[in-house]
Image 1 (cartoon, one colour):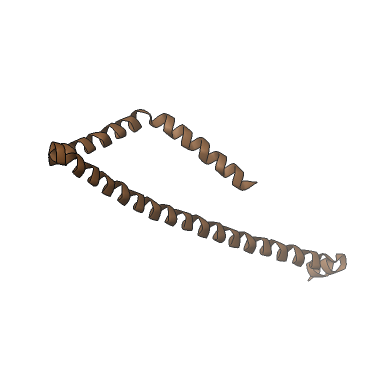
Image 2 (cartoon, rainbow, N blue to C red):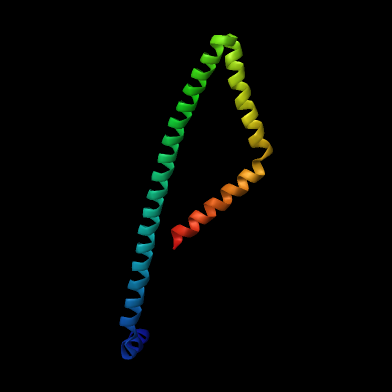
Length: 118
């Protein structure tokens, strides 16, 4: 009772209700912004997965076509062995240069994130 009368006398009850309303509104706004950002991120990830799946299929089918074409002159085993050897060498090069590749990717991703924040 005394607290309420003092707040009314100093007109702080309106200020407190306004500040409370402001804080609640800011919290709701942040929630909406987080939901929007999350939806955008999920959409980008889904698109990346779909594109990755399609690219994988294309690479697989082209590899089989190349292996079959090489196999016409060297025999089926030779064609598929050469294509497998190519991918083995590619994987070995990526494993040996993984630090360089990782550093380059980190640098490009951080640059992209800095540009999007501006």
